[in-house]
Image (tube, rainbow, N blue to C red; front, side, top):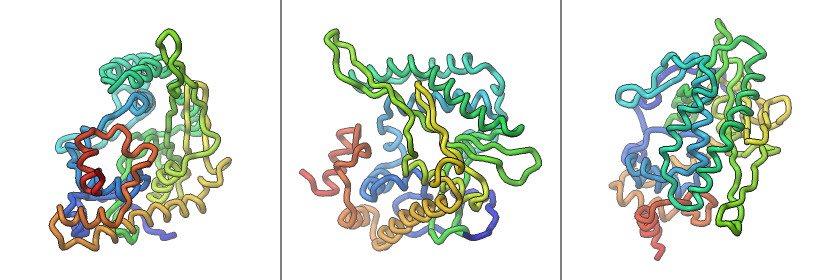
Length: 335
């Protein structure tokens, strides 16, 4: 492990990027992109524009997860990083800190109710999660308060952190945002970073009265590997000197994983997970770089010939608009 101290350089202003990434309009890697197969990454980030990506449908569970995070962050945070002019992230003081959870939840629920589900099944989930969300918020709050209560912490949320080109062998920086960072006043490093994940009841069978049954979710007994890679990125930013907790919360309860009860969250294993994530990005950079001297359209076609679209992936292509799906199938020559 290298001992370089991270800086606050803005990764999106890096002077040198690989030619292939410039052609494709890409500026950085992110931990969530590491979970995508190469073909899916090529299509979403090399073919679709940023405006088109924003058109990709959300779903009730994603929106409900955002709601929970928003409530907890607005109640607990001293500082929240928000997008300002030119969509640049900047620190801002949280004016809602200490306001009651119930009052913030009401505001966030009002926002959640503006979501338009895509079909009958999504509508049933949308309505069910409105009933569950108060319990999920309460369980998450209790878990976070227990973690934070060890010390008097300054709490920062949504902070953009990065590993720039001088910290890895990669040609592009890795950029991500933390859910919760707890830090003692006067200390140079945070005391702990927390990644929060929510899980919601799953749709069951259609009942005789026409309503849907639901299977209530329980918190997982082991972390997801994709989530461990996210945690590894946070740890790598601080040279693996800051511990990371992974909190899973449902309406029924929660599970908190950290270095004391999960081997994968110890320094040694976080370092290994980070190397695995780095290798995904390094492979991607090398594949894209093979065709860096071609025009964009031709480059995309050549890259598509080397990577698998993974049509049977459990979630990557789910809900993709028909127009985009047709475009992807044309790229991989699927009738």
